Every structure is written in C-alpha cells, then in structure tokens.
Length: 413
Image 1 (cartoon, rainbow, N blue to C red):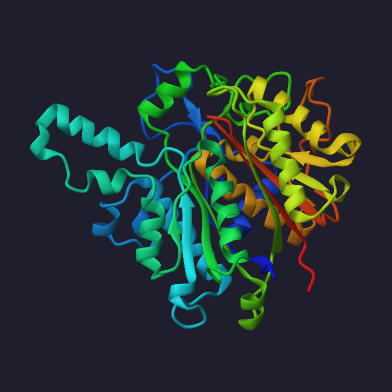
Image 2 (image 1 turned 45 degrees about the vertical axis):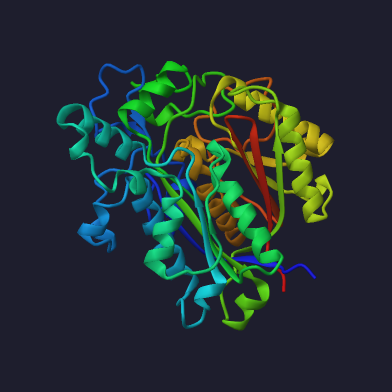
C-alpha cells in the first residue's frame, strides 16, 4: 500500500513577505514584489530590476551571527523558510516526530553564487591564502539541505535536486515518493535561491532573457501578455512540510492539501528553448501517477515566466495534455508578482497551491492587459477568483529540458 502524503506546514521567504498571511494577502491584492535593485549598482546593465528581498538580516530570524557568516544567502533563506514551515506544522523533532524519520530535500538551481563571487574577488585581490576555508562548503548547492538538517536535527533522508528552474518541484516530488514508499514519515522540502548578483544578472542579460522594462518595475513581469519581454529575477525560498497521512493524523496536524501525483520528463531538445511535447508528457505523467483524467484538474499554477517563447510553449503543452479541457481550466502565473525565483520557484508555487486549495481562491496573473492570441487560455487576469478548487497542478521547467509537475488535491479524510 502506498502511503497517502499530505502538506501540514509551509514557509516562504520572498519579496512579497516571509509570513504566510502577508505573502498570501499581497498575492490576492495583486501586488508586485519587483523594484529597482538596491544591493548592487546595476546602472551599466540592460536590466536593473528584480524581485529582491530588501534589508534581510539573518540575525533577525534567529540565525546566530557566526553561523550566518558561514552560510551563503540562499542557505540563509532555506533555513529561515524551513524554520517557519516547521513552526507552521507544529513539529517538534525528537518529540512528536522521530528525528531519524524526518528528512530534508531543499534544492537550488545555482547555489552559492554570491559566495563564489566574493571569494573569487578575494583570490584576485589578496591571493589564494586569503580565500576562506568555508568557501566550498558555503557555495555548494546541497548546503541548503545540509544546514537545515543541522539546524533542526532532522536525521532522515537528506539530498538535493539541481535541475535549474525545475529544482523546487523535483525536490517536493522526490520527497513525496520517499514518504509514499515508507522511507520517511516527514520531509522538509522545497527550493532556495539567491542569484541577484553581478555575474548572475550579467549572464542572464547576455542571454537577453530578462525584461528591460526598468522604468516600470511593477509591470515588467507580464506572463501571456503581448508586451512581455523577458522574465524578472527573484530570490528567496519556499519550503513545505509533507508527511504521511497516518503520521499527520496521529499527531493531530492541520492539513492544507494532499499531494497525489508527480511527473518528470526530459525534452532532449535544446539547452534553453523549451519543447512543448516534453512539458505535455510531464503533465500527463503526473496525472497518470495521480490516477486522474485531465478533466479532474481545476487549476494550474503555470511556470509562466513572461518570456515570449516560454509562455507560448507552455500554453501549447497544456492544450496537448488536456485537450478541450484546457479551455475550462483556470491557469495563472504568480511569477507576475514574485518574479522568477529559479530553483526556488517550484517551492514557492507549491506553497501557493496549498493556500489556493485551503482558501478556495485562485491568485491572479497581474499585468495581463493585452493577451497574446497564441496564449488563449483562461489566465485569471489581474484579479483573484473565488473557486472551489478540488485538484490543482504546478508546473516547473528548467534549462537543459528538465520538467517537473506535481498534483495536489483538497484533503478529504
């Protein structure tokens, strides 16, 4: 018998807030977290805007100053969001959860880019002897999972997915499968990212992948709109606490929703250009895993990055996977408000699925003023929509042709 797996806790760190109520309220108000970047001088860059977390101080969130200096910014985000999710779930490791039965899988698409930059500058300016001995363990992408395990005492399965912008969703899906087959009772899972740095911005600018709507930051991320000109980078973390239904019931946990399906696929096509067939296969596999037909799905939180090619490709993929039912679905891209958190996107968007199912409200796609005729689905434009969402899906697609989809439903005992 496969274990049923439910969501019992959630935590976020985003430009729209780090408390769930604040984050959710800002989404429903259609607020944008995008603004001019303050952390660095990007005046010479084609893109000078991002969904940046302003004035973040890890000590304000209970991370010891000495420990914080040994963590890259993405790891700090992972630890803070995980602690929030644990509190939200009412978990006490070693008390109501066996430490050896709770694991961690928090991925990052890029890892410690800031640490890499800083230490490379030290190398050039001061020589190799001055490079920090913590450089490598601060920079490597698995350290989000590692530090969360160390800070919480979670001794169960511990791993990291690195699949570009599909990372967060792969982390949640892989964790779901670990619990489903009985290898853990509880998993702390999601994604974290912090790449609003000079080299990260320069690389994406050189690709011409990001919006250059610098004079209107709040309107720059506009998925499915004819005026979209690229994605807007975000940063932060999204973390879920998921556990077997039996375990959740034993400790009387509140349940946001139930994960019922997970799909993966590879495009085998191009480094950066998506293939709608790959995304369609991914959604179809998630539905098969959930033992559902296409007409059972009410809402899709789209990957929806606001790139000209990506939004068209995903729209085509949805139509191939769902047929005529595609036109009856509600689809929205919350990246219009959060920006694109790269490896953390799937974690944040899974949190949004949980909130959508538990509150019966679909967050909107803001800035959708002139819908692209080739993107002809119902994208919940500009205002939230009350709806009895029974089954919801979240898509994440990454460079290299990595695709991941999870399906979540309203919990029923």
